[in-house]
Length: 226
Image (cartoon, rainbow, N blue to C red):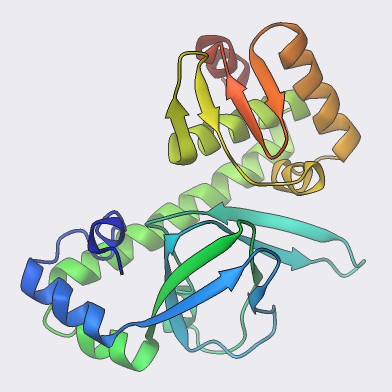
C-alpha cells in the first residue's frame, strides 16, 4: 500500500513512521473494478476504509426510489468512520467509478485499540468528522439558497481541488462521473446541469469532455460559485 497516499488522510497524517508501518500491517487490502459495489446501504458496518488509488462514489436511494450521490472520494480520503460511534447499518452504498480502485481497511475493533494512547489519531478522527459535518451543512445551505449553475460551479471547484491537474489549457478535472452521476452530486436534474455546463463552455470558462472537464477560466468559475 502507498504510505504517502494514506498520510494525506487527517486520520493518519501525524503518525510517525514506526506507528504508520505498524498500522499498515493491521490493514486489509481490497481491489474493486468499475461498477463493483463494496457494500450496500443497510449492510452491517464494522470497518473503516481509506482510498489508496482510484475513486468511489457514496450514494443513497430515496424512499421514492431515486438515486442520490452523496460524495465522490479519491486517494487519501476516508469513509466508514461514522459507524465507529454509531454501530449498525451502512448509511450509503459505495461503488467504484474508476477502472480499478484500491482500498485499505481497518476493523473497528482494531481501530479502537489503535486510538487508545494515540491522541494524534483521535484528533485526526475529530477533524475528519468535523469536515464531514461542515460539508453536510454547506450542501444543505446550497440546496436551499443557491441556484443550479452556482451549485455546478461549486461542484467543479471541489472536484478541481481534489482531482485537478494543471495543464497548458487550464485545470484538467478527471472526475470519472457520468452526466447522471454529476447531476446527482449537484442535486439537480441532468438537463439543468447539462445546460449550466453548456453555458459555461459557451462563455469559454470550461471545455467539456467525457467523464471530465477542463476549467479554462478559473476566476470566472470562482465568481459564479460565490
